Structure formats: C-alpha cells, structure tokens
Length: 428
Ligand SMILES: Cc1ncc(COP(=O)(O)O)c(C=O)c1O
Image (cartoon, rainbow, N blue to C red; front, side):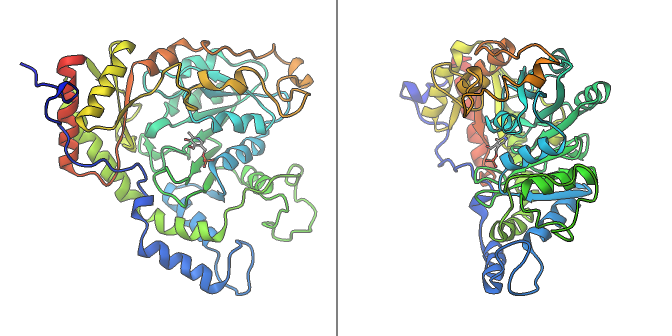
C-alpha cells in the first residue's frame, strides 16, 4: 500500500531545510576576500592600468580559465549577454543575417542576437531539452549565419550533430555555456567546440562574482574582434592608437569589460569549480539511482551523462495534467520541485513567453532587425507564433524540475528520492 502523502496529512518525506541554488555564492570565503583585498590594497581596479605595476586579476583569471578549459583564447566580460553579443558580432553576424537559437533558454541568448542586429530563428528542443539538430537543419535558409547552441540546465548539446551541420552549411557556432560551466561532451569541455563559447558568472551560476562572463575562442581574429567589440575604446591593443593590423580588426563597439574586483573573485571561484561540480553530479546520480526505475517517471535523457554538470534534476511525467499536482505534493513533502511550462505563468526561459520577439518589438519605429532590407534579398520574412514549436512545449509541459544545490548532503538526496517515489506511487 502506498504511504499517505504529506499533502493529505501524512508525514513529510524530507525534513531537512532546502538550500538556495547559489553553488559558488554560498562558498565565498577567505580566498575571495584575500584576492579582493589585493586589488583594493594595490588600488588597481581597472584591468588595463593602475598606480602600480601589478598583474591584472582579470588577465590572470583569463589565463587560468583558458588553461583549464583547453582553449587558446579567453576574454573576460561583464556578463554572458555581453559575451554573446561580442561573439556574434565577432563571428560576422550583422544586418540581414539569421541566427538559429533554441526555444528553451534564458531570453538573453535570443536578445543577444537582436542586439547584434541578427534575426533570431527559434528551433525546437529534443527530449534532452537542448537544441534539436534535426530541426536546426530544417530551419536553415540562405540568410542563416550562425547557430547558438545552449547547454541548457547543465546538459551538453549534441555537439557532434551541431558541428556537422555547421560544417556542411558553413555556419558559425556560438555555445551558450551560461548554465553549464565545467560541463563536458565526450570528454571535452563545452565552450571549446564552436567558434566561441560564452559563460555566465551571474550570482545564480555555478561559480560567480555576482555578475561576469567569459568568451573562449579558437581563432585569433575572432578573439581580436571580440576584444574590439567588448571594449569600444580598444584599450587592449598593443598600441591603442595604432592603425588596425588587418581589415575587420577595429570598429565601434560597446563596453563589456570585466572589473578587477570581479576578476579577483572569479580567480578564487575558479578553484572551487571542480569540487562544486563533483558534489552536484554525485547528488544528482544518487537521486537518479533511486528513481530511475520508478513507474510513471522518466529522467531527462542526456547527450553525455558524464558531462552533465548536475545542477538540476529534471524528469518527465506521462501527461502535462499530472505535473502541477505532482509538484504540489512534492512541495508538501518538503522538496522544492517546480513545473516548467505553464502557459499562464510567464517564464523567460521559454520562447512562448517572449512577447517582444513574437511581436517583433524594436526600440525604434524602424523595425530593425526584422525589417532589414539586406535580409529581404536573401530569405522570406521570419515569422513567430507562441505555439510554433509544439515539441518544445510538449516536453516542457511534462517536466518536473528540482535544483541540486552543491551544499546538500547524501541524507538530503535520499529524502528527495524517497519523496519522489512516494508521490509517484500515488500521482504518476
Ligand atoms: C542560458 C543563459 N544564457 C545567457 C544568460 C545571460 O547571462 P548574464 O546574466 O551573465 O548576462 C543566462 C543567465 O541566466 C542563461 O541562463
């Protein structure tokens, strides 16, 4: 007989408190303080110069990050959004170009395309909740310039398929690794497959300085162009007033530079990445081990389970109607589980709610990028409907999501698994 659910007055399966999802943020301690105090003691707050001849923390962080990831070039930025915009521009995205992005990502991945004057084309996800390569291929037109592949909720995209498509159609690939820092695909770090890999160090992310970002690049010229765009004053150049060294090196940009204070915190946080990911992976595995055969639920498949950073647990129920009662019951058991797609509650991670894209809202009356005359020469208008990607909405409608804080204990994991099994026995 099944146990009485807490929502029906039974005892709770999870009696310990839930940690907030700030994996790196909750670890901030002596190492971060030491690094920040060095910046303040030296009064050296700007990466390119200061009163003393001391090494830049931002530069040190870039060097450490690229060495860890195995990438030839790294550029720290003030955010992942800034990293994405700089990378898209550096890859040559501009007026008239289409960029294919997934319909399940934080809205920033799409907004960055518009900021780079590209036209977003929104592709379906597959059951892994990362971009569906088959749908990407269907959505390619003569105007397509790039693909933004988002390693969503810690899970790597199918990079073999994406890179194969990119090669066949001569497209650039920008990886959005905001939610998958330290994730891998077939043993290689995400962010090192495409032309650029973009990372976020915003407070909710695995390692953090409150705000911050990073670009990894494979190619020297793309890296130079990222540098140019991220720093409109081009302070980074060996001689900032010199002529450009090649066509396309210098142009007007924005300011997405990382500050030395953020660089200092990130240097300390990078040292925490491996143990944070190891802890989240081990918690996730421990729970999955106990629920993988439970009737009525299916754990989200992964393109490479070894490469999943383990930041969350997502599982499918067999119908969307069951999700809300299931989550309510889990909440009553003491587990912070949430539904993902509910057409009534806006969530900026789902294209269905991106009204400003659906309605092609631009900041001026000239509706750039959608009315771009250069685009009209190459392809038909891109149109959007809230229900245009039914597979994405169907998958998201059936999914239950739980964060996996690194600070959880094995006991917490076992209680979570117990709660899921208890609720599934009655409601799945
Ligand atoms: C998938 C994804 N891309 C991009 C971003 C934007 O990152 P940032 O806040 O650093 O600009 C986020 C942030 O939540 C994200 O989750």
